[in-house]
Image 1 (cartoon, rainbow, N blue to C red):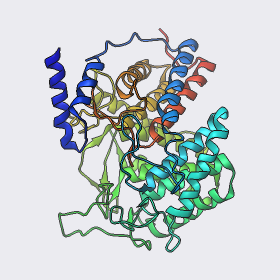
Image 2: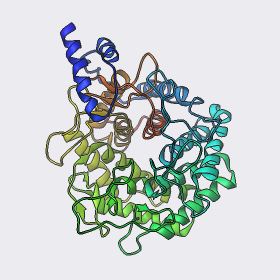
Image 3: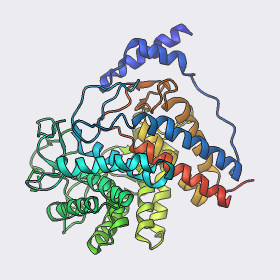
Image 4: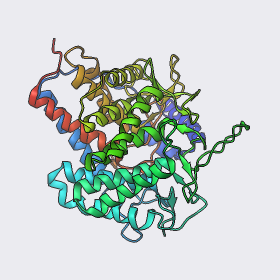
Length: 469
């Protein structure tokens, strides 16, 4: 037993090459406390009592491992916005400044909690308002418009983020501001979201090929790729190739414009939402249920790996967009959403521990068997969505949902200090014990647990859509 624990600790040290930091002492402690492989929990049938029991469990995790650990400690009362860096025990770490993606996501989750949990409304409304104030007064570029990709804690431009504008960051600024307006009814929040949409539409919309150009100078000029060189410059921190279109930015633009259209029924917003849905479903997603990651400006795909997490997340985002558009679900959208989830289950699922692996190829074995928190949470969300839609025909999704929930409970969360580990290794141990950084907010886990709890309770009310034999 001791030798196995030592080997587990050594494996974690090797994973330090990924850029994660963990001490030998911490690894040994984790190896001692986490069981090797849990036996699969007995399958519970989809009925009212079981739905409600699961809903109570997911709601408890929402509070214990997301809301109660992030808030109010992440609220920066000195400089505005939100702190992002936290150690395993939730002690603040060295700041990486104020990243547009993180700030928009934290504003969004605060607004959603205020709307969807009435007992927490008075606590979270001021936090959403606090987030909008920072987005509007600091992160918004008053000289040239648009949200900065990021700033330092004092609101200054730095070489770490540069003075550029990235559509991924613009998207989450819109997302946070639109949700804050929905929660607070403050016209300043809606004005900010509208202003940001008009800025990206004027400077970055591709009227010829559809979608958006992604990396812009401070004054809104599109930075194109140099077609004659094999060396491609990457967006700072994001890693996206400059001058190309990406799956990642466009699925989150779909997400943010969906949120905006929910509160602002503008004709141009609707046109862009429908266009983004078509781009994601018909250009980015392909049979047998995978997504290309990068594209030329005219949407020619560039070969790369398959990200299981983005596949299952996009299944949800496409269907959510159609819900907000209000015209029902297009059979093409339903077909592609199901294919994305089915492919991830077929090629990216871990039969040993449960959970989804990080990435692989379309028809091959997983290339990375790490488990990222956001992938596991998005998997939980989409598996239950598929169960709601197809539970009359099959138990596959509800069985996988339960196994996914077991994995998150026993491996992805910290029983001692609470919160969600960013990355779990192939041996079920945390690769990085830290709980927060600029790319890890309370958004993926918060949204998934809100959605799953609410969906389970709706299923309990109807107790329909489930195969029970």
